[in-house]
Length: 177
Picture (tube, rainbow, N blue to C red):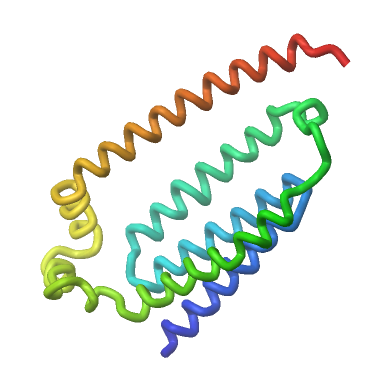
């Protein structure tokens, strides 16, 4: 019962932070609300017993990605980059039912947990090995090909972002007010 209340606390915190991300227009506040949402999601993972995923959430997203956003915020010339002053509030409000469905799915997964796994394989593996070893053994055996495809997609996306950033920086340097 206590775990469920803590889960509700973290999930409501994440929802409030996500609403803050889509409603604020100041980029600094948006980054702070995003950081708050990422920390709340890590708390959800810790509550659900996925300590490895929660730690990765904190290390990769809450630290690395948030610092990356701060670097982008300081490096981009916002007065030239912003073409219009509107914020996409309508899209954020229209996507709210989808967000609620995702949270409902997380709630179902939290309540059912590892017992819903086929034949209880994960429960026996977790009792024998531990959380981190189970994630590693499943990721690098059954889902190895999918893991490598995702790595390739991320690499292509990173190369594309560098190329787009280089092209935009040349555009801003040549643009005269």
